[in-house]
Length: 223
Image (spheres, rainbow, N blue to C red):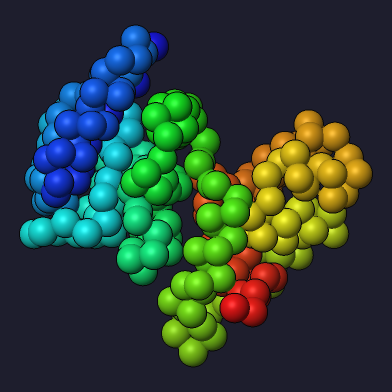
């Protein structure tokens, strides 16, 4: 099955590089390119890509707003591109529904794999980068004075072990790392994560991370 990809970045050279990498793969087809968020939204609605590779900082409409519109109205899966040190809006993009993020200097093999993972309905959460990113920008997540905390019933529906797994997911640990921490099999961890997604009504691992921070289960680490 071919994965259709739309590239959204205001730097033509980067789009060309990504296109060359992706079109070398037999199961990936780059169906279009956009230099700003507004164009990305318009093209995505016409081309119906499986994945939009979305830059954050673009003219006319930024990647956060474009992600919000595409995920909310069209169900398109979005993979965010970030330079990390400069993009303070990545957390907002994740909350808008993005399925994860990649650094712009990502190795070609990781880029290709990430697109396949997202197209298959999963999320791309690089553990170490997630941990650093959320610790740095967690202050941008809403506090108690801005929005209500998740209803207690949402957490009460979870078992003690599921809450423990949720905390470890939010700390940026991979399934293998969580399995080692809890001394269980990786298959068991995957089952717990599946139960968390089902009980909390969430789509992927990224949303679990943000939920855990908003629910106060995890606090930013000291700088």
